[in-house]
Length: 427
Image (cartoon, rainbow, N blue to C red):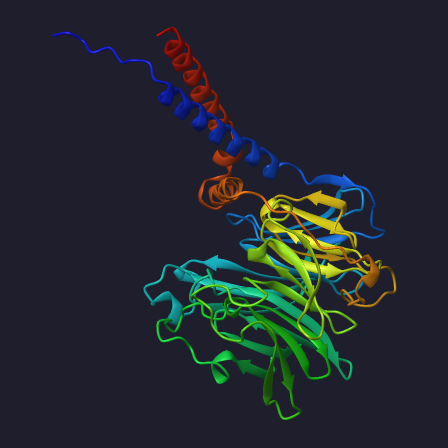
């Protein structure tokens, strides 16, 4: 029987070359994301350290403190994800996050619910000198995905400690004292109607941030509403709700209004709202009337930013999550300092100077004459490729994404492409 000879093909050569480029790009991205944190832009170093909360792509979460020169001066390794981090004065760092427990460690209601494992949400205060946990509060939920604790804010009432927490899994905001007793709470279903097609454990609010604004006033981010609201808590514990930005309703059909899947809105001293507009790949500042007065980013610069803090010098500290870095931009949107962190950063806070008080402070916006929105966008192909890299980090083992396996495979495809191209030219 006569053997069929495979004819050289230009299309096959191009396909092999594309596979080679794709695999090598994944490998290089993996190498970079797994690399030691390092300074990427060194134009204007900050005066103090920066705290970073690391969600992690695959149970590699934690927290780190980065010096102005990019050196990691403290690192806390967690089991699971870390979201919110905040300095509460000397030698007190607040860390909030979630880890996954096997059914054998879950309360009975979650151990027998036909869902593998359960989520364990915690907020803790850690001494960075020893990594000792000095205070802790936590609870269990059905599963980690979309049932995590993303944000906690510490404050005091008549000198007594209070914490307000955004409970995503139960669609509520609640405040506790040091003993863990609930002082007040608000459930989203007391104000909004749960969509008929969303079950009891469905993610309809994705409540991902809460900040205390003042006595009895709290700002909350409802990500799946594309909305920021304000809660006013009366002395008797009753809560009223006022929308601040967005359509103020569940928006599963698409993004409506000025925000798209936002994270970590901050109320500035002049009443403006600074927010990480994640799906828009930008950070935006709105005035009291909801008009956009400043923006920076765009898909050519940021990829799913999830935190933006206005600093006392008028610059803005941005957690550029899917680019695995923390960036400081000036009033013109130019990057003046950046650190590559790896491990999917979620939140960043500039550590206050000695004696500056607890936590991050809100500061007025940059001078208005300097407003110059910078939104640099990329094409659809580049955005799709970038999204593919992100999915690979979530779905593939990190040793494969950044290891020699992908690089060797990519080079192999490249060699095969060259051979095929040579055969095609000769034919």
